Image (cartoon, rainbow, N blue to C red; front, side, top):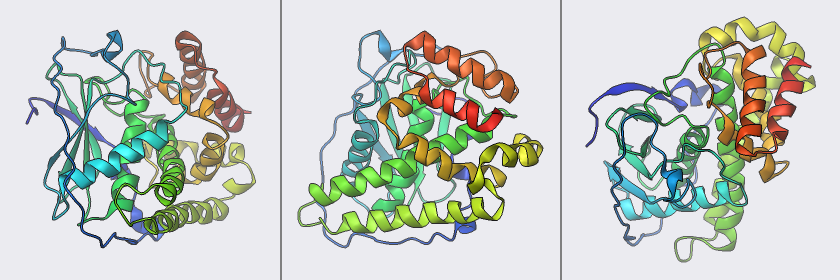
Length: 314
């Protein structure tokens, strides 16, 4: 396995699921057949590899499944993450100039889900997940969050998380995953990836609704359900130090889910994140205009960036 240099890990490690009252639910009980998949190598120069030089984008590059899946068939896990990617990115223009050449989904039995930032010159976006046997709802949720980081250009060797604005990226990609779960539930109900498993779409929807309900309850407790500008001013210092969404930053998630669900043109703006020097390590007053400028550079409409700026800063 290519782990020459571990720079950092980012992802759901900063989100305490117990804080939103989420238990594992809706495990599919059917026997699942092995699904074949191809492994495709892609070597590039160190630094930011660019598969955008002609070898596909995040929606089309190969996915490989590796690691320890704790009783789940790797091919079945592949079917779930492939479907989650497809529904999450359907209709989304992928405009970033920092597309990976391959997605690797690495099953672990312990530790938090994350992105493995590796400095080995490859164009692999390396996602780590940690699920129980056939826990497809949890797999889709964890993978969706990390896929959001990849979409937001946080998979290359320079993508180490940085305060003060890391909390916003975490909230955005968590919202991206929740949006994707709703789409996955509908897709599963209409055309399940496994024969005879239509009903499991309802379990995915229940899982998604429970996650979102936890965030909504917290947002109401801190007043963010009445507008997040005042909430942001009140909690800004803590969020900019904490860096994740296990603290007050999670109150923004219901608002951000609604913004992303307003249209695929909102989602495309995530591909403009982190393309400027300093990435999330700049003040919000610089981060948001930088995001808007990056949208213009790659041809994204900038509607989400504009809305987030208006919501937070007025």
